[in-house]
Image 1 (cartoon, one colour):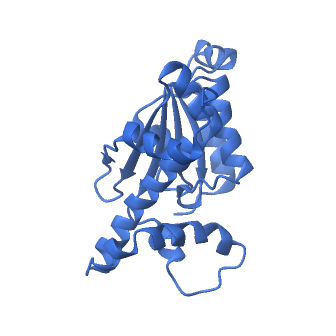
Image 2 (cartoon, rainbow, N blue to C red):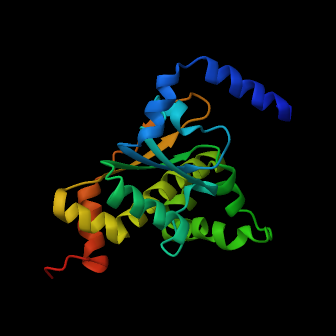
Length: 211
């Protein structure tokens, strides 16, 4: 479905008319989101809508296939700002079934500038190859890769210095891994054992100044 460019501004005018002036005055004052949501750029996965949260309640970062390379300054800066300055209580990594980025990563094609980005997903496959290769159904294999990609990106969140240091001081933020199902509209919490993951991560990536 394509929208006429000028229709966007008409939509905006209608949307503004649906709210009183106090709504925008309150928004303009400050933001105090409780959540950092890290998701895929896919246009079918609108963060605020699927979570039912209002503007100002959700700090959002999106990219192709919700990948968080530890050398990507963009995503790492978002995490640090959300955790250290906005002091969010929850960080969510949300993938989705039917992710084109995940599917593209596993195709034997030259995708140009996408190659190094999607190689991060091939790394996830390499780490979990025995489990994934044992899944006979291609669709089920890709669904599981979507989930495992979320797990690995949650691990990358917890490698972040701001996340580790704040957690040591306060026990926050809570970090979660979710998957969104396009076919049902439902969110699935992968219910990761984050404390156990963090304990394992800190054996190598420990940033505790106490040693």
